[in-house]
Amino acid sequence: MKKSILILFTIICSLSCLAQTKLDSIQNLDEVILSDSKLKTFTNTQSVLKITDSVIKKQNALLTHLLNSNTPIYFKENGYGMVSSASFRGTTAQQTAVVWNGININSQLNGQTDFSTVNTEIFDNIDVRSGGGSVLYGSGAIGGSVHLNNEIRYNNENTNYISTSFGSFSTINTTYKGHYSTSKLSVNANVSYLQSENDYDYVDSNRSNLNGAFYSNNFGLNLGYKINDNNILKVYSSFYDGQRHFALQTSTETPSKYKNRDTRNLIEYVGLTDKFTSKLKVAYITENYKYFSNIARDTYTDGDVNSLILKYDLSYKLDDNITINPVIDYTQNSGKGSSINKVKRDVTGFNLLYKHNIGERFLYEITTRQEITNNYNSPLLYSLGLKYSFSDLYTLSINGSKNYRVPTFNDLYWQDGGNLNLKPENSYQIEIGNVFTYKNLDLSLTGYYNDIKDMIRWLPTGTIWMPINTDHVKTYGIETALNVKQSFGENHLSLSSTYAYTVSEDQERETQLIYVPYHKATATLSYNYKRLSAYYQQLYVGEVFTQSDNNKKYNIDAYYLSHFGVDYTFGSNKNFRLGAQVNNIFNHNYQSVLGRFMPGTHFNTYLNFNF
Image (cartoon, rainbow, N blue to C red):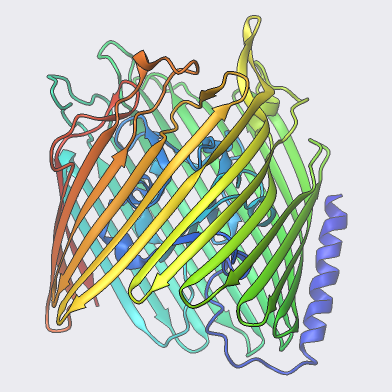
């Protein structure tokens, strides 16, 4: 199978290159800056929330806190900087896909991404796509997906950016980003280091956070080279190395720690003609962890997975209004660990994507995907979306899709309970989106319904726990997003806010899923005057159940958090920005996981330098 797929890729790529030499060249290449082009081209009927570089630079470096304060996604954290998992539209952590430059990077071992291991400052922008997206982004994109993007620009610039910050609990974060480009070459490099003693005191208590220290290193290099007007070569590379001591709930627990090291490498060839856009991607991703149950000892358990991804993508414009896009991809995952024997999974996927604009106001898009593998029976996936602009003020969109999540290596092959008979989780989803635009105001309102079957749960079976396809969950709710901007001379005000009402019901128990709040809201008010800028941020999270029977005795209370930040730009060319932030201004005592208390009021100062 592997040799056949490689031969097929080679033939298609060769034919594509041959065709391109016979067609007219394309002069305008400015739009080809993101590897994740499907997010722009085939996500017209679902909401996408964009977080720009300017917002990223002012927020907490951990992806958890950036998204928690600016999106409807709910996060549960085992303490500040500890393991953090997402619940998007009432789904589980494994049902939110994280996509790095167009490649799904959720762990093959546990099926999720730990959002506390992602440093936001090394990315140029971050997008949050709500709703099902398994056709485009593979397993896990049921509740939604988070997209981490690096731009490749050909703008004849040579720029450097250095940021250093120091905050409470001996927290230090330093980042360097460099960009050099000509009309043919683009080089982007980034380095970041983050560490914290993380020894904060608990609010209203004489206890403190024990064994909570962590650090992480990130290195990235992104290259783009225009071979000629028709052909572009791009390379994305990222290396992560981190260590966390797992915070203790009681002083009598044995201190433990966790080390993980991840690498991501992607080579992309892009060929352009007047009708065709041809892309060949080759990605190699590794993940490795070591868990030390006692930090005083050298003994550990471990696991690692190496993933090879090949993808050929041929987009063809039938005319100015119709785009058809077949995609073929092949993925091989090879894993092993202390509790998993050496295993391998091969998956071949066939996609067909179609978009049609009818006039200036109406479009529809259809996407399908079928996978072939010996490890599980994969369902046919599909998505249909419609969008109509009644006027410049109001747009209506409707999207329906079938999505899935495949069993992880731990689900299938764990030595003390893995289940080779598991089926993929699957879901049917429909959503209706409304977008209102008036002058400087943008308001979106989306209602959705999601029926998820064959959810995988680890349950006791005799003396061991085993994963079983047992749960049937229905989620439904509404999401809103508001953005308002207003200027008064040199005074600029902006307000951005989100609200989510989420019901996520276990159909057998008729109860809300644990760690899914009914209500979550965010709001950020920003002010700019010449070189001065400031913001005030508010976060509200409703109470959550922590027991499957919804016993209110064990609920986590709702909480409000308020943050404030101010900075000033100085220097003749506005090269320097000095700022300070106060988080949890009112020193609220709160937790997002039962017994895992978060810090009270804490501070951060930063200095950014552009040259």
